[in-house]
Amino acid sequence: MGKTIAEKIFDTHHVDNPSGDIHVISLDAVFCHEITTPIAITDLQTRGKNRVFDPDKIKVVIDHVSPAKDSKTAMQGKILREWAKKHGIKDFFDIGRNGVCHAIFPEKGFARPGYTIIMGDSHTCTHGAFGAFAAGVGTTDLEVGILKGVCAFKKPESIQVTISGRLQEGVYAKDVILALIGRIGVNGATDRVLEFSGPVVDAMTMDQRMTLCNMAVEAGATSGICPPDKVTLEYLWPFIQNQYPSKEEALKSFKAFAPDEDACYVDHIELNVSSLPPQVTYGYKPDQIKPVSEMSGEKIDQVYIGSCTNGRLEDLEIAASIIAGKKISDDVRAIVSPATPDIFSKAIDKGIIKAFMDAGFCVTNPTCGACLGMSNGVLAQGEVCAATTNRNFNGRMGKGGMVHLMSPATAAASALTGKITNSPLFKG
Amino acid sequence: MKIFKGKALFIDRSDINTDEIIPAKYLTEITKKALKPYLLEDLDLQGFDPSCDVKDKGVIVTRDNFGCGSSREHAPWALEVNGINMVIASGFARIFRQNMFNCGMMAVKLSPDAIDHIFNTYGGLETFVDTDFDKMLFTFSSGGLKEEIPFTIDEFDQSLVKAGGWVEFADRVY
Ligand code: SF4
Image 1 (cartoon, chains in turn orange, brown):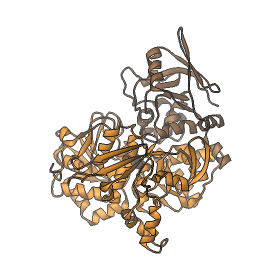
Image 2: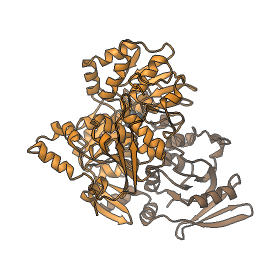
Image 3: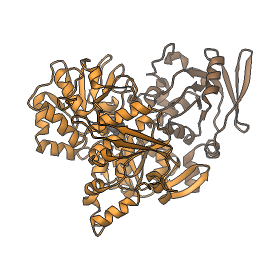
Image 4: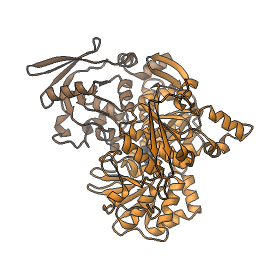
């Protein structure tokens, strides 16, 4: 019988099968940030196990609250910094060189086809865009990953999601994933992998595939995965060119992780997106979705463009094309946070940052900030934010605040009117 | 092994996320104890008051997909420091469930029918839950009511509960 991408990756990383359907697999990378790692470090120290399995496979960033906003967040950074130094972890990204984890790690070439990756962060599923099995874990799993380079999972079953048709202008990967979550629900893929395929996925850039996979966990999925292909190869080529004699050879090795034709899925979902309009969430759960047109006119207080979902260069480019030469509404405040220094500096070169500033946006350094209500744009009680992030939970961006999730295009258009508004790029 | 009994806290809603269990602003704490006052602080549920309803409870009984959202292990820790070592639900989000067992705590899934039955019979009543780990049996009691409800957790999860968590187990075995 054929195999899914996840099954192929599990086979190549098998360590143990301690019972039933539990599989212990070896890890190619363990990603760390300052919110969930310091407590893992102190626990390992208390247990007398202050070791790391392989400093080259551990990648560390300070991203959630950067710069530190108080003594407690400063201490989290300090613990992480000293630990990375002590163990000779070279890939450590401190302020000035730091970005949102799920944007900066791919940018550095750390996510590869066939890799197994864990991180103490639920949106680790983002890296599945590269054909990796990448999963968010808690602190204890992270500790064991750091210590032994292994993690235990139920061997995940996969749901095949075939995305067909053609996206209309002004409709993006964010709208597709919102529509999918709206269809299957926040629990629709629990314990499963969402394996994406079809012409729409094939045509997506890596930035778009990352947006797609980023929100897999919002449907409960362990990981989202896209089959690695030429697009993946072109993105990764600068990092891997010394490992392969040619691009053809590299692609061949990537294809070892393509799903078999006769792979066995627990479910198939066919999503034709040809008539899909831009989507927005209306409640406190990411599966509460409506077309933007049905929410339009709803007043907002803040716009936030950024995060691991939609803070990449393409996202900023699209948003900037909408606000360029215009001013945001007097009734709204708008924040844009490029997800990494590289994105930031390219956005400067392209005039994107100036366009945002001229329109009246506040431009922040790369950080998670407002996305999880920690800093840089926390909402007051009763305020409403149009955000390109991935979670609209009650209180997520500040107690008593409401978050509406949407694409960068919709967020930019909404900044101009101060109300939820379809982008002018969407003609439907 | 931890203690898996106590008064039940009934949360009659699905999809309780970890932001509701412990809001992100408390993630800067570096001790588990510090989380104690904030458990379920942002849970907006009719008739629920986190300042008094959490007190003295040992077990949570709830609906489907409990613990969805962020991977924060602060969620089980916030329960643990409040004396709640077990959640009984009709379903769990993957990471939360794993975090519970990794900490030597229990996340026990019962059928939706069994959960319905428990809510219908005991919801709103002061209810005590006891656990016989070896026989895999809960005893629910309230006033004159009393009944045994069987459960199953797989072998691996049992060994984590017995070992007191995954770190010790993994460091020994792998
Ligand atoms: S940007 Fe938001 S969702 Fe992404 S890692 Fe940061 S806090 Fe988490």
